[in-house]
Length: 111
Image 1 (cartoon, rainbow, N blue to C red):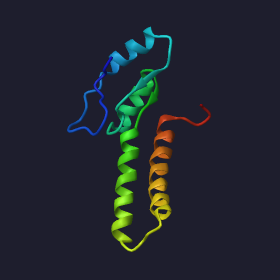
Image 2 (tube, rainbow, N blue to C red):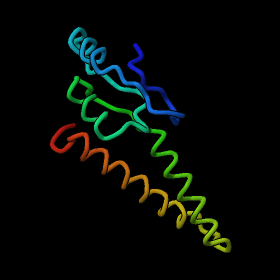
Image 3 (cartoon, rainbow, N blue to C red):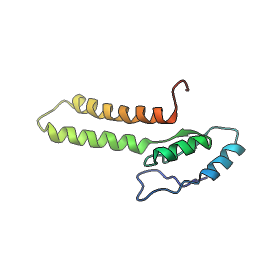
C-alpha cells in the first residue's frame, strides 16, 4: 500500500502517512520497504525508520547525481575522450550520496 511516497522526483512536499506505515509494519511478518525515498527530508527518513521501515529506496537521487556529474564533467572537459574519467567523477558523487544516506539510516553494523 502507498504511504504517500512515489518513485521519481517530487513536485511538492510529500505527505507521508507515518501512522499507516506503522500499522503495516505491525501487521506483516516481513521487512517493510519504502519506495520513493528520494526527496524526503532527513526528519521524514527518521520517522519512516522509527515506524518500522527496514529499507528506503533512493534510486532517483543516485541516478540524478550520476547524470549531473557526468554532464558537468563533460562540459568542463570537452576534449576528454576517456569515459573512465567521467565515470569516476560520477561514481564518487553517487558514493557520497549513498554514504550520507547509510549514515542517516543507521546502517552501520547491519546487513
